[in-house]
Length: 418
Image 1 (tube, one colour):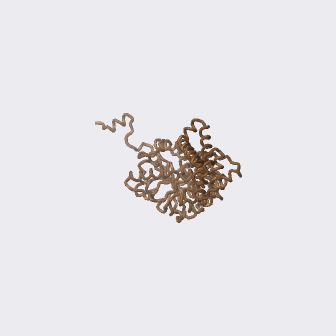
Image 2 (cartoon, one colour; image 1 turned 120 degrees about the vertical axis):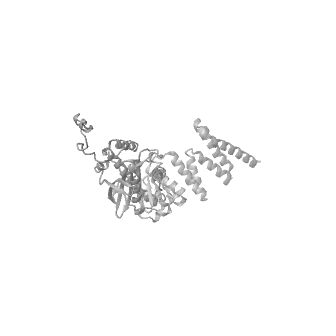
Image 3 (cartoon, one colour; image 1 turned 90 degrees about the vertical axis):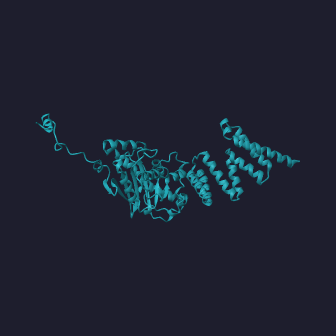
């Protein structure tokens, strides 16, 4: 009796596997062509995939370079991490992730983690790629191994996104990430402080162009497209579209190194490195004031306000008036009322209501010149009441206070005259 195998052969069905073509190469093999030096990387938890590049520490990036040459003292004060002052460049790790979702959450993976650190006179950039979600433990283990010599992280929005996401991924596999206690410099927070008055967008790409003076090539891809590109890779195993993702990630990490040095230099010597724009000097003054360095803040406010006249720059009115306000209050706290009064009068000449109120307070409580106090109170009321309804509504609380002050001053004047 013919066997099942014989019956299948008689029908033209091939039996066995010898006739089958060889299987398609693993996705990792394809990735060898993705960027320079791609290779599988073994760990105790399996294999992951890495792409490595090395640059001279002095590698130019826009107007600067990657190496850390600026003093870190003021940067350490701003970051609230005094240990940064003593760390060598080799202790800093620069990190950026590309993820399967931009909002984070427990279902979000960091499929590509770019990390860079200085090794001798080189900057070593490694990109840890997850060819398949099953490789995540190995990817995370490899990242920890790379970061082991470091003691500080540098990121861009890493405090809010990258680091919490990575911490959750480590926890999901049963261990706490080893770099959780590193000092952390989040340059997005600093960029917002330094350039929010001049640059409407503080994305890393825009900071690269406007501050570092470098432009990405057409190979770059918008961040919002990256998750979908990875999902497509998982379906097709075609790495070619991911070239732009690796480029995007590499530029992010390289820019972090250049931006750290630029920012440190700016904080170390603000008048030398930040004097091109008066509005930037005002931002620096506000930062130093908040750090408690009132001498540096005063100097920067003065130079910033003078610089505007010299360069004939147009500065947003609210920035200019806020600078006058804050400088005047520094002088007031330092018992230099004469300088404070000059600044309030300059601001009042531009119909700044708060300056009117400060002048009214001074003449009522310090000089006890009630007619002048009433003059500035009435001037403030006039500016508010002659404005649009929206302005009046916005200053409703001020109006109530001014009316109360006016009545009090009238009572004091009446008592003086009787």
